[in-house]
Structure formats: structure tokens, C-alpha cells
Amino acid sequence: PYLGPKLKPLQRQMNNFIIYLQQMLSNAFHLYLVWIIFMFLPAGLKRIVAIAIGTVYPTICSITAVATEEIEDDTYWLTYWSVYGCLFLIMDVSEDFLGRIPGFYTLIIFTTIYLMLPMFRGADKIFRKVLVPLAGLHELLVLRDAITIKKQMLKDLDPERAAVVQKSIAKFFDGSTSDSDPSVLKEELMQGWGKIKLPNFKIPFGKAEGGSSDEPTEKTNLV
Image 1 (cartoon, rainbow, N blue to C red):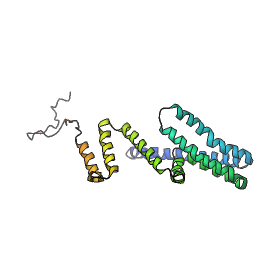
Image 2: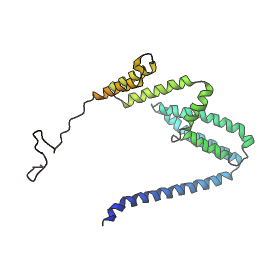
Image 3: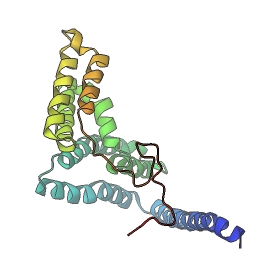
Image 4: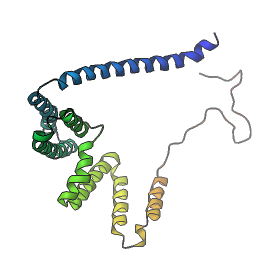
């Protein structure tokens, strides 16, 4: 009776871990079977599969992104297509020499998945670290990031706080006065937070001003 309630949370955690491990092993086994089948395909079919993985799902997501009002998903998939285009050119040029090597198209597929999935954001990383330096577009990238930060700030903060933060950021980037010091800007923002009035909560039981205690007794009316 004493150990049962203590061990139930541990039992649930262990059951969840076992179920997660079973699902992971099952998915890994299925992927291994698919990979074995893929390795026995002709080179032409491997090329078709690799291109389909890199184009079908991103095309559907891109069409959906264009139909929405949000700009973030448009930017995400535009970045993907820019990087995937370079990957496709590399594959098209090198497959005549490297296409017969086992694992070439597997590497292309894994690279495509890395570029595609939002959990990795590989396309954005390659775009920032490779394509932007090669094209010399650092200023435009910084401008795009600044626009994204401003939109996110206006979305998360109320107009009054957004205006204060916007002024602080402008002072910081100006850098011509002492107000651009980060510590000074931080103090200004903290002073703004100090002006926020919090509601007063009345403690139902506590010590009164005269020293008497408001703790409940047998005669306290709880209704």
C-alpha cells in the first residue's frame, strides 16, 4: 500500500519509454527495408526518387504558403528552392562520374531532407553561410532579419511597449550618444516594466494589522 502510489509514476514513465523505443525500432526497421529496396533500384529510378523527394512535398507547401497572408513561410520555401537548385545542379553535374558509387543518391536524399524539414532548417543555414557570402548580399540579409524582428515584436508586444523597445533598438544601432550603451538601454526598459501595475491580491488567512491572527478556527464561517 505504501510503495504502490510511489511506483506508479515511475511505471508510467517506463511504459512510455518502452512504447517510444518500440516505435523507434519499428520505424528504423521499416526505413532500413525501404533503403535496401532503394539500393537495388536502377540508377534512373534512384534519380527519379531523389528528385521526387526534393520537389513534390516542397511544391505543395510552396503553393499553400503563397495562398496564405503570412510572409515567413514564403521566405522559408523560397530559401529552400534557392539552396535545392544548387544541390540539383551539383547532382546533375556529378552523377555521370559519381552516380555509380553506392550511396550517392542516398546522400542526395539525406541532404534534401536536411534542407527541407523545419526541425533542421538546413536550407536557411546553407543560405546564410554559403550563398549569401558568395553573392555578397550581407546587407540585404541583415535588412530582412531586421524586418522579421520588427514584425515579431509588433506581434508579441502591445503597441506602447513595442514603441519603447523600438526606440531602444534605434538608439543602440545609432551609437552616436551615451544612450546607446546596452546597460543604459536595459535600465530604461526595466523602468518601463516598473510602471506596470499589478493587481492587489487579498490573502484570506494571515496576520492582521493589530497583531491578531486571521487563521481559521472551529467557529470560522467558511460559507
